[in-house]
Image (tube, rainbow, N blue to C red; front, side):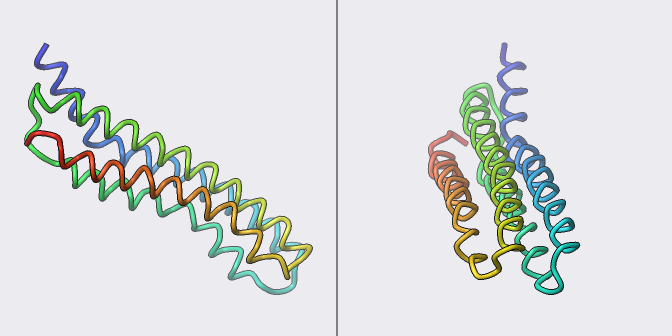
Length: 148
């Protein structure tokens, strides 16, 4: 049984980085595809489309920091806590990045027709980013309570 709990701890340790990376990949790809399509329809302003398509990449950074905050000797006592915090934070980061990519794609699509609303159209992506920050902060706070 101890081996299973230790295995769960290892999964939890690396989950924020792995799941954050998966979400960032999918989110950036979705937004990047929209940016490429928008560049065919406009004559300028390419930089803002490309910049916006990189926004979902922040979740992998949060995942790396959470991984480092969870890093400790893994035992049967702390394995379940590491698993719970790591996997749940990783899932929150993954879904946040994926849906942030969709928000960015929508912002790119609408702003190619009405460039004056670009700033306002980015607001939904910023709100989704806020949820990733909440999960990140909660994981950091909770990781301090897991026994070393």
